[in-house]
Length: 395
Ligand code: PLP
Image (cartoon, rainbow, N blue to C red):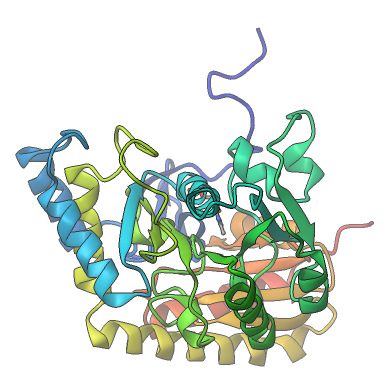
């Protein structure tokens, strides 16, 4: 038998972390990494954050799981806090981003069903998007590497070019339910939507009774320097999927919606055994306790500006490798002139710096949001050393 006990769907690298300390990971042989990947935008409070650890320990000892058949005081509290701080009126808790997206897609379909328009079931989605790996969420993308061999996929999605308002408007027809997009594309290569694009989508949604669904699984929860990225655009969604940062490393996601958009989601239309259990809800509340302190947002904005400025300074010294820096807050990307995957591997293996490759030859820089100046300096030092001894692979 040659198959590995862990199903071999990931090309795993040699980094084998066994412990985390703040912004660093420690491997099996004691090697230390600066973690500017954060488990792909998850560990916003770093590793071993004392408040989060204490919450998990205390809640695990008090009550870990009950059932959504019962009242959920901690869940009511977290939902109320999300309602108070966002566009939303109601929240469904999930265990992952893809499940939050599934709930968002179902909520949109049920809205039109409840409005007497069940024929309006198609979502217009966008090139290079990533929404997860369930059958529904791979159906929403145009990427063969995720879709091939899994057909028949879920009908009801039409993919058009990202940031192309004209293409999006031209795709609207009598079956359109709305639009689904990441305000800042993550896996696609840290690509922010333009303000005109989001404003144009909002306008057509209002005119034609369509729903605007944001996927803030990667760009949400303070990553871009505001609680949610949409705040910086002045465009409100009707439905939004979140995950990653809201659990700080514990599996937690949520689908947020306005009262109007959620009008079809009545008793029995959706559910989850684990979604919103007491342990997850305690975690979510603690993450909010930390990140909703006004000084936290200021810190993310300040660190985002510092890191970006330092990266921009690095570019001219290595203009054979680097093209530009893009992104918002602490969701940054360096667009490379060569293969970003090989450079990410080089930084990791030779310089102990963890970043993540993204689409469009981008190196994604997604540090814990608690970084300070010393982590930025360490990152720049490693990046600079990595750029000096990187041998561009022969193409
Ligand atoms: N949506 C976006 C924008 C993501 O970046 C991801 C994961 O990377 C997902 C959805 C899927 O989340 P999960 O892997 O938790 O299902």
